[in-house]
Length: 261
Length: 261
DNA sequence: AACCAACGGTTCAAATAATGAACCACCAAC
DNA sequence: GTTGGTGGTTCATTATTTGAACCGTTGGTT
View 1 (tube, rainbow over the protein chains, first blue to last red):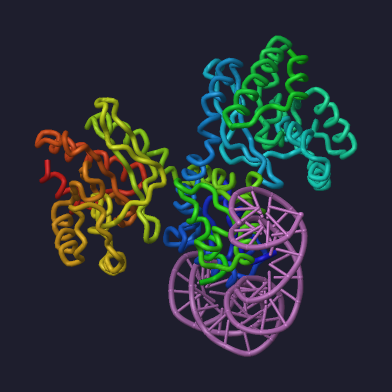
View 2 (tube, rainbow over the protein chains, first blue to last red):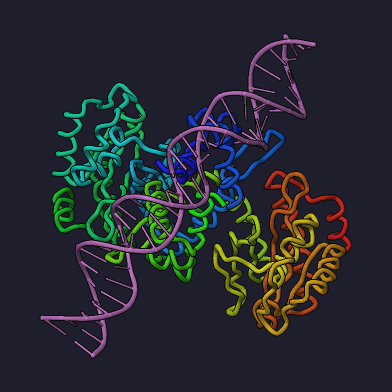
């Protein structure tokens, strides 16, 4: 791995739980030498990608990421375009709608919308990284990924997050085949024990799956009626988002979705 | 300059006017060897910072910047916190309010808000890079920067953007002294010939200037009354934003602003 | 059909930049 | 005063980056 990769990997050490990190800690977490970390960080700091704050001189993500994100959004209006659809989906279902994108080997939540309909709802956070095997969104993407890429992701550890999490690769493969046949994925209590969710894959230009659109519901509120509503609304919303992104849902998937409702 | 710096500099080649760029073009624009660019880009692509699209395999900013920006905003709610204040400012003045942050040697617009009051208004774009010498926001920041940093920025070329642009460093220094004495900066037709604007510096923790808050008006609409309204509202909004950011306006500046209104 | 120029991408010896153990200076706790 | 933790620096060793020349493909021109 080159120097640039190492530098960019340092950015992944910043999480919501650990927004700012000191130099020694970064060296420890990354496994790199402290001097190396220092050089990489100062170089990124000079470009505004990270910044140093406070008396402890801790590092955190810098303002340049805001500029880059704004630039990306004007060039490829991904989040901004999907946001209204996401809000409508939350309203129509009365539950929490969320949109995740695949970034290499990660599935990242980039937007979500709550419904005001109920006091209890499944809460989400921006920039959350979702486990491939334990979420409906993850399964929806996995199922429609080219086989080699899917297998690469399935080859990794599949941690048991709750009692219901499927951790056997073969059983998961079978599950993904079902998802592929149905056109949508569904999990209950596999990620967080009191939440269940239904998700469909999102397609961009070229029929490639790039993410997933899901609706998450507290287990206590799920019913056959709600289930049907969600299936109908989430497939409609996914179709709309695909169009907004300048792509289209592959005909085979559209057929599956029509059969669902 | 290290390898990381070169890689990050490539990101600055992507602009709104040129959202995606081919490999040879990137090599040409950056002055680096094509093979070098290719390696840097593929390394950044593996981390999602850029992505390759289309038959021409052109590069553009990748989805990872969205995740980083979301993470930065949850850690340091800069834009999200300021947005409501910005909208209120646009409403109160009936004009276009905008907020810019200093990123090293650049001044970048990170948010703006329009007023519905008039059909004509000054339009803005996210992620715009503003010239230091020709905008009121630029002057507001420059005036309150430590002298060494100010001089470093004044040492650069000061292009004549309109007939009214001040391009003489010494006259600009005198102008900045006035800005420092008044606590706010004002320009008319120095950046775009039919727009004028009034801006005040924004302070974060530690009394350091980190950006500027401005209101831009079509020259044809400016009047002494509007001028007074803008001065009052923009200083109030700047005070509010400083508080939201966990800092405070230095007492000396507060005194200047009270004298203004 | 032949040609040309430009594209994205690859190769490998030579040149350069990254690396890391040991080192400060500083601070807080004991 | 000692200990153990910071953030930051140094410099000989080492491994990575670099770039001219290359390949295969594409699209327009003669």
